Length: 110
Length: 120
Image (cartoon, rainbow over all chains, first blue to last red):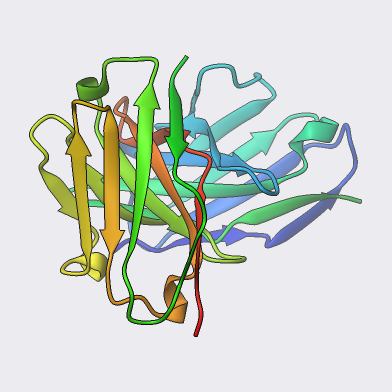
């Protein structure tokens, strides 16, 4: 089973700042099957990025994903007030059909 | 639009079972797989199972094999999960999510979640 480790645990930034969130896998993620979700308090997670770098429907272009192999990054180019939330990475391993999540990075207002 | 509506919160005693439903609307029910995902307090999400609503085949996370049942009802566009032999470690918010099968397999959209509390 692939283990995903996210860092940092908490990121304290101001609106307008650039945020870089890291997700490291314990082994190579095949086919770049790595995605990112945003979760606000009391809400379900929302898909932001799939296939490493593809934005889901309706996701603003200030969100971008990159990476390969075992190292992946979610970048928020300029933080808006609504972006302060917890972010999770998730990988899909097609053989076996397994899904794992990271433990999350909280982006909080500095 | 696509909508997933789950049943309400549950309080259970250790050793009991819990059943949760997830009703889908806004698209052709049998066109996409569904997942069950849970999230314990303060933790990241944890994938539990995936079901093909057309035919009912299920893939389980090994951790839940033997204790989790997942079914679908195409007449009501609803999927169900039942988790047995509950312990306090099963206290979590349980989500259904539709599969998004593009460049991999993802969870989009999600239901609103069902809180399950297990306590004696």
